[in-house]
Length: 432
Image 1 (spheres, helix red, strand yellow):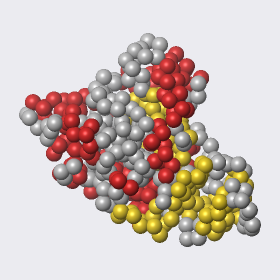
Image 2 (spheres, one colour; image 1 turned 180 degrees about the horizontal axis):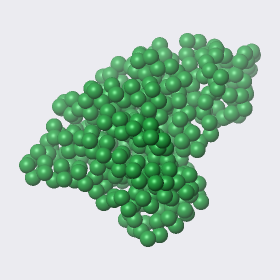
Image 3 (cartoon, one colour; image 1 turned 135 degrees about the vertical axis):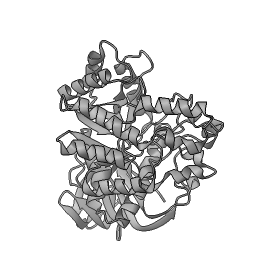
Image 4 (spheres, one colour; image 1 turned 135 degrees about the horizontal axis):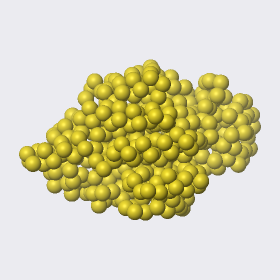
């Protein structure tokens, strides 16, 4: 055996149990009493918990943005940081250039990940144009294994006609349509008005895309999806109004999933008033305390299915080029390495069980995006898990993290619990 973890609490498909885990050639060969294990690396798991590897279905590694910047983590650095934080699978995106065929963008993105990504990965294909042969292009991607497409409704050019074609195709092929749900035309109008009034300081950023923009976009895409019974996945849900919209459509029988992110669960718009507030900018913006509490309620009652990061880091220097005008900011923050400790630490404090947290961080996303089931650790399955120490307490410091970013929006935050080790196949990464 290559690795043995002794005496941990282990999440299995039948629930939590105290057990040893033995790994040989990348496969879990024993969940129970292991006995002697000569030649194995033995890890003391007493007082610790073994959980399925985290699936972060929403990351942007080495992404070239409209602002002219490239996100500072590539697939190698970002996946390594994720592994050190318990993340074993990443969902990234293929963004075609203007006029580029979707499948060409998919192949290029997939090839880049194959060369550099240390974790498992899957690729979503983003659609921003509405060519006459769109369905043919999407079919080419589906034939190469794509099960999820994405549309940015914050782009003012995305209209009902494009949404209709996307929903119809995804329904016919049983794909998932991921939706950045913000009202693009309303955002464009608000930004133009604020710019004309000289209100481009960071304090005005949240008002440029308020919660009603999220709720209206969800209502629009769900009204289209209802025609075809398409499966819709709302990314980075940020507000109580957006959550209310998700609940309303799900209650009416719609096939809608929702994801939120640690930044909307732990941070508020007060962050923008600090001297480094410009560094902690992403879209949608952070909201208020009431929104944050509503989202925790959604995690507890099942209204929200998954927690992802929207990891898209930029350095302080890249962010610093904004010049006091929020419309020039490269939007995105680091998060892949801190997803598990933030979610599990605060989630446990709020009474969420390990089973519920594992569903939110792993099993639900795996089911939605067609990955192998992650209901728990099983004999005969790939060694894809992390060892979590609930007694470890850390204060987040960007200098001690491994993401290629020289700040953290959670700088100075005290976290209860931390991933100690991550196993993926035949490899093991130790955070300490």
